[in-house]
Length: 593
Image (cartoon, rainbow, N blue to C red):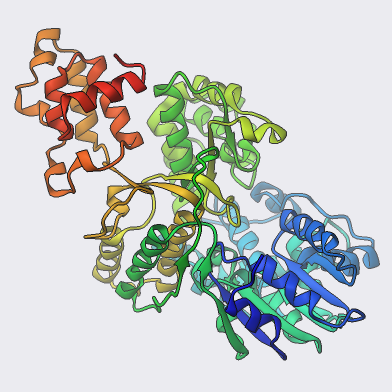
């Protein structure tokens, strides 16, 4: 392929550089060409973001005959130097809260379940330390990472004890008394200040580097290249930092995206304007040069596990024709918290079936109120999500999850899936022909409400976290190669839809309530639709003429609902602002006539 002038500049550069590369800009191709242009006897290290990227990059390097390039992740480098040398045993998962209570023999007076809350914070403090560039745990101020008022009050009371117990647990790992974690051996790797024998080090996804790995990288004598995208930083919750902003290297850019067209590029730029509300940098130079027409892979992307699971439940229960679906990552990870509690554990707690609860932490709770109290004091987002799902669906969860699992295809049959489900974090670096966004991302209204609430409570808004929320929306939008289906609540004001951008209207709770009411009315009533309550979606008048826009998934759902309830073609046409002929044609296409 012909390289762009921006790529040529990078390939022929010298010294330490940083590359700000927009989504789909061919950064892997650029890195390969950079490596090919270095002396054949030079030793080059390419640090990939995760194992799957590492394997893919290794294949590409070998295909180009670059045998002098070694591809590693930060963890694979650390593993070879730390784990082998010390004969450590590594846990595939981290320690659960109840395991930490047992290992440390934690004790606490007063607050019910205080030992579990303390153990939760010990775990988080260890993660904070292991991802930092500090030498000692006590050099960190863990309290500044806690935002919830109740959680902050609790940590303030037990802060010294939490620090003491975190140091004790780390010491047990260091001595080999207990298995070590992946975070631990990466931290120990940083603390020994390793010297890596390479002439060039290429550090990918630099916007999501940990302080620990960045410290290792910056200490090396090799020529250093950091590649990333400032607006794709989405791992702040894992204490990642944007290394592109931390180094004073010569700056280069890759602004042409070969993934999608200019309409998606312009939307991405417009969405980043939300950062003006929080006084963050919004500048982005991006030109869409993609021209894919395929619609084979269709993904549904959500901000949260809860949002995604609810969308999957909605899809499989309402659309019986769907036979195959796929979840990025193990589907069970969407029904289990990181620490091991399952959706079924929370459901059994709600049903007072404590004997069926497998997770020790959930079993220690006497009722749902105690679990809610624990969630507030630990800011355990995943457990909070499970709680909401259980409240919403109750015992229907058993059949719903069984239905989803029956439709789920294995990894090697992913291409069979009619829909691929993923959170933003799981689809990082991936792309699909069509992307539909779930309505759980930040938007202008949510952003302004959050700032107003924080200031009303006398709190300083967490601008770093809000910036990352906007980045999540940007990353999700830029996963598409062709079509984007986006809820109207996420669309910037006055941004016109296009042939590749479908705008979904969002059904409110009142809309759904009216739908149920109408479904129970006599057929004659449903056909006439002259009742005021039947004028559900009058807000379309403020939008571009519907007849000029493609049909969206949301509109198809409404069309099915109208047909199921016997609404006349003329009334449907009035609602959608389309001709009766257009309605009949769409009904035929969807096998509704």
